[in-house]
Amino acid sequence: ADIDIYTAVMNGLIDQQTQLISSIGEEMNEIASDLNATMPNRLSSESNEKGTAKVMTLAEMANDLLIQMEDISGVSDRYSSMRGNVAYELRNANILPTSHHYDLAITAFVNAATVARDTNYSSPATNNAPYVAQRWLQRMET
Image 1 (cartoon, helix red, strand yellow):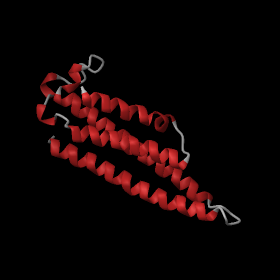
Image 2: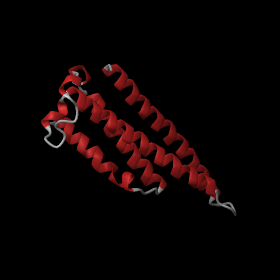
Image 3: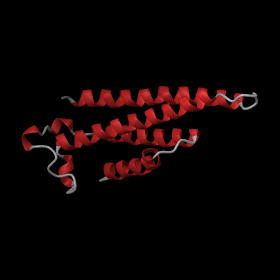
Image 4: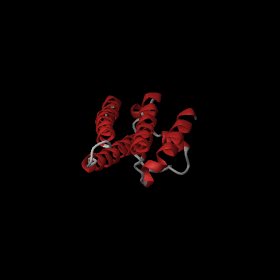
């Protein structure tokens, strides 16, 4: 695998999040205008919950890719809790994550936390999203 492929996939995950967040924003505007109606649009609320869960899933995918990049490149060897995840023969230093990859993972979790707050959606994953973003930020700084 080539680092450009990882970069493209992670960029694509953020693009998907952005599209979903835009759709959720439109739905939220519709819900706000429906509050004056006699029958609020329950379907919009349900679709926002599904959209928010999908934004979180995309963040988790970015997280998994970054962990994989660290494992393959050997970066994770510096962290004793992660040592030994990938056999030495499978190592490829060319897959070393850059600050851009860490930024993408952080952005993905910030997006998930923000949209969950805006839609009043709560799950263990979305509640944990700010902490995961903070962990990647700290990791990037070391």
